Image (cartoon, rainbow, N blue to C red):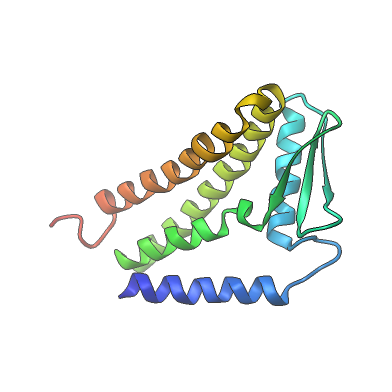
Length: 166
């Protein structure tokens, strides 16, 4: 019940954020914009010439690497929905409140960092191996983000959950 309740409330709050928090400067929304900019910086660190620009026809950011338009970074790429799923699970099996809240914050930071790394590695992969784009985007990179969440869940359940001794 806690899982469904927290997932519903957090999803509704996120939906309201997407509907009401529009910005011309942080296009298409501040979180997606921030993820796109950090991904751009990491791709540049990898030695590529990356550029992020607002898409003119849809709510996304264009990802351009070495003057090649590779992909769009859309709202779904920002990992917020994954963080909501993660948080709801942790709340469903909460332990002590301070540890639970700290684990949620650190877990969301870890998911965010993995997501930005995932986008940067995906961009390099798409640039270097465009013939494998479907496999990279549909199999490998969801595996990275959901694998990270799964490992964080297992660690929580084994180390901190109120059910760890059952």
